[in-house]
Image (cartoon, one colour):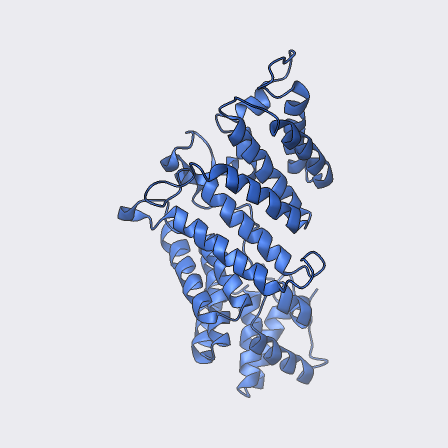
Length: 362
């Protein structure tokens, strides 16, 4: 049984390119896992949060021991996925850090706590409050987050835009959380604007300086453009991400995910021969790409090639570990996997004509 490869990308708290953080002035000796939502625990100023374990604190420009312990316990709760407790503890710490005055590191610590709480809220699918936290953190960093040449002065500033973009994506899919009368397109546009900002802050890389485009954020922006039906722009982003995963990250799994996204965009643009050719080349190298097996089934059915359609569907349903159940679900294809409408329609036509076909998976 093949291991499934759906073409889905890693969770928001990515570590891509974090090894280059030192180039923007970060402390040395940090591993990639220390970047992102937990950087407060390991950065030089983060030691202030974790280093106070005893002794009374009388200074008004220092956090109380209770606040320090709340911050430590908040991160511990986050790591064990006790998200509700983490949110409560981060909120306690944020409230106290907002009251501090006269401490050089106070703003950086508050930004870290806000960003961490925002990530907790994203995981809890409380996207509006998460965006508010990112807004505050970005505003606090704005005074020194951008260099004269337009690039980020430090990693966290650009990263906050990328993470806020993901929160806007989440809000786009939650009608009950958006303000009354605000369509999802508004949130998709906000997400794209944040990804644009993050990519600009990272710079072009190479001789031009900066970290260079982040392939994960290129992918996120491509997905957002695809959600708006802007498949030409999405295709360009997916191709950029694929090239970077291949040459820079040397990450074959993520490269094939990007190729799957390219194939979907090509199909949406009516370039179906190109889409099918790319899908065939990709599954030849990675047979467990469920997305592309199902694409090839629907594409073959549209061409009148029932034998190929049934063969690809059978492999997806019976020879890949996760089966094909989700690919029978229109809502999942539309809102989670975000297939283009034309391909969803083709898939539904195939399924309507093949009721009772052997297989189905889990």
